Image 1 (cartoon, rainbow, N blue to C red):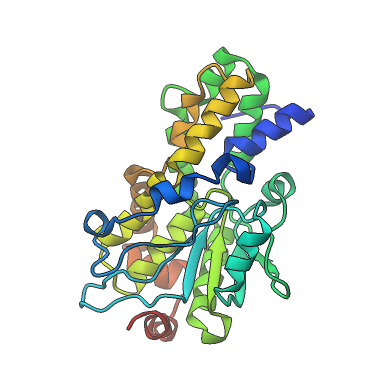
Image 2 (image 1 turned 90 degrees about the horizontal axis):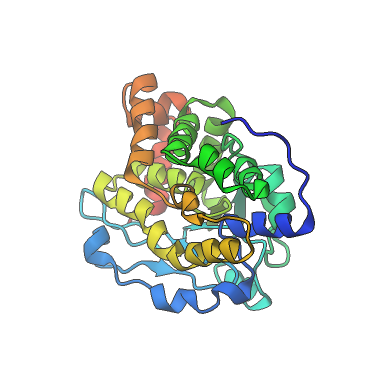
Length: 311
């Protein structure tokens, strides 16, 4: 999808921030309690419920602990956290993060996202490690489409399956792009290092780059595919209210006549994940081949991941 550069006037810049679900805290403050989940049966969490970190300035923050492995053991709580953007956190939110005793925060956002949404707000003494993961210009393309304010142009750019195909291309790029593989590999190695944990990683919406790494991590330590996929898809439930509010705001502002064109960009879908997995199989023979050859994770690192995270 080709777009021309767009100079963002202030109202469009605000809308661009809203687009990907990064709403001001007041817009989502009531959402977390309504979706604090009891999703163990649906997502096969075993004995544990989803351990969600309820914040005002972010909606998709959770502990990856509690999932059951194929051998009947469980992922430890308090070791690895996944999140969406942390630039809009309130002081109360930052205090909640302090209680997690984080040692490492990894930010997968590209520089444009950081400039538009703001640097992470973190507890004193903690700074984010920037590991940009290429999303094929998704953020910029979305802003450019919105900035046209032209329903026909927006339909041309995002309609008729184009948005969903862009998402599948992004997921394939997670596998094929050298820098992406390095960002993901370094993060998994950090998780394997007990001196770097507890660790939190995030992107803008906490669903695609963050979702892919979470899926890889869970599978690497023996969590079944069905369960790891359930964790991936859970972002749709946790983000639903904020994403709906985003679309309504764009329509009310007169920026999009049909904001539902954004739904394929806001959601995670099983076929997006499958696009990455099919690419991993094509390039490396299997997911294990991708972990070992594509990401360069040796047996010792994979064993350390298991030791660190499985009880």
